[in-house]
Image (cartoon, one colour):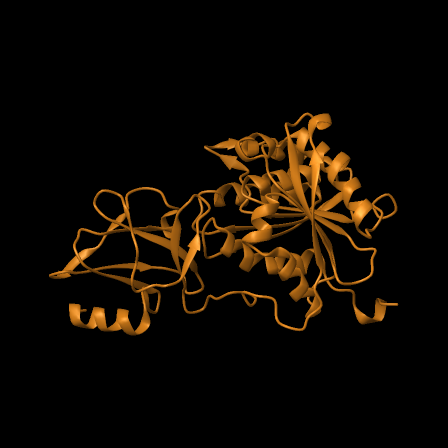
Length: 354
């Protein structure tokens, strides 16, 4: 494709423009220019653009037709360059902004914002002290009460600030409930410890204690919840990456309370080290869990997820596992989480409603 055609398509369609499974990126200006993104799991050497004509550069990548992709352009010194042909961007969580796009068969699972006119739940902010569970400082917990009368199950969410701000989980639940695609739930979105997050989410008994002794009593005091003493395993726990690891660990350690686990891109194997969830998963469970897991096909964490699923299934846990065409980021998790919520908290059939 010549420089004139590349520039004309970039201006008309934005970049990358897509032909079948090929996404073509265009840069106009001084080079050399390099490309890196989800399709490499942001590892290894960035891909070089080729010079097409004076001041015109291009690069092409083959991708699944249903992919969601984040990427960045770099100069020869490794400095980020804005892509002037792509106005779609996303905060990458590390202080930078990535450009984003969907391949032709991909797309958001729900509208970016809650549709007008649907009932809205209520979000309140709380602080809990950690000293008596062995952790430093305080944690913020945002509680979401659905717009229906209880009692309802509780879904505890690790990295709660990110799921609140970047996933907009209360809006997601509002929309799915209003559409009849999931049953109402309450949410407890628990902030992480910042610098101590890695320790707190690496299969920590202290974090399980935080949920059982602090978050759950707070939620019961503020929300109308199903009583887990009468309905064992009624509540759920959700997390991504190390939070996904911690979600499964919580379910395995406290199945009578948290019988439903949603793990997104769980970091079950890191640098070829298996976390203790593998040992726990091999044991005959006190109570089988309902587990929903997903992971992006571009991620290095994929193999660990694939390795864990048959272990959980062999022990008697009920597992549904999905792989999506994407990477390790919150927009991809938001898109796929819709399926996990629908499966984990299915709506009550009309015949069973009172």
